[in-house]
Length: 393
Image 1 (tube, rainbow, N blue to C red):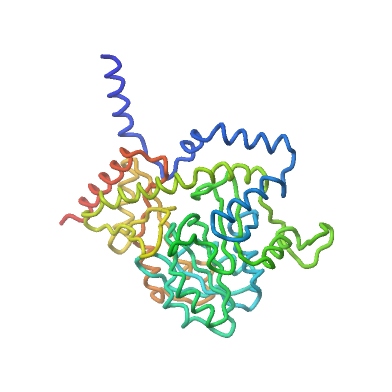
Image 2: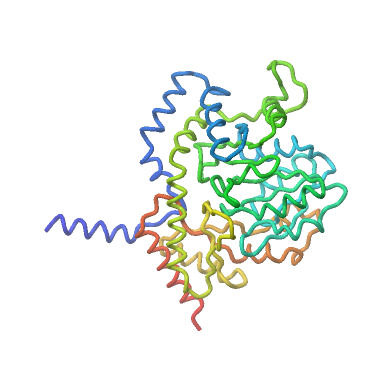
């Protein structure tokens, strides 16, 4: 009798416990022994920079992403900066980027003295609209950076065709989409270079900052290895050009190697969670679930829905969900062309309507692999009830 009562109390408690946006403690609980053994190996070696773990991770991730080479660096932002610099981007150049993404994509361009040129997105995918690119090309345009946002591949074929015809370099921002596929091939190795981020919240996240650059070019691989280490080549105390101090440390590499072994399983869990959300939210008024573009495999770094309206409706729904113990996040509330740091570029509200509308409507739900079926049901049911309150006449 007491056991039955205890189980009932546990279920009741579970039904009322907050559901976080991400639960890294739950992930660590399943990996604790593997992680500690990997970190102990690094500590015993006492080699913390450019050692065996980093080299092994580069080889493993190059294979995983279908690239010939992978170069570990200190962050996903550094991966973009070094890739853009290696592509020849510098002061006075222009780089086409989507207006709806994280600030790092454009900031990486700015930090090199170049100008980000904002293009609008395709409403269905949140990704750079290929039709927006050509009208923004000028004699100063050096490159384009398609972002595979939320884990959904951008439409690469037309982007690459335009780039080849116009002489542009293409660097993929693959920070949120490791393991995603476009027409059967992993994203990140279609362009001249691709960047990865290992920020802790990513699908493959470390225990601090970290990043990687993918490329199929032997020459770029050599140059990137030099750039990440103060421009040094075969001799560590002779620098051929100005570079950075941007190296992925051995502790992060060891953690990431452990996690990489589980990434396919986690990807499958995220996709299964997304499919369950799709089914549960299918007939809820005012909600648009994220469609998957033809020929693409979405890896759901985020499960991002749209809440119809002017933005106030989305904000009220988010507030009510929080009051009921459901964490959600708005990625991203302000498109890049309307960020204060880019006010001097003169882009006005209304010029990129798809990006501006997305910023008012998007809401990301918990989709991490460790979510239980009961938690997914509760998120969906609570959201459906909240939407009925918000949209009922």
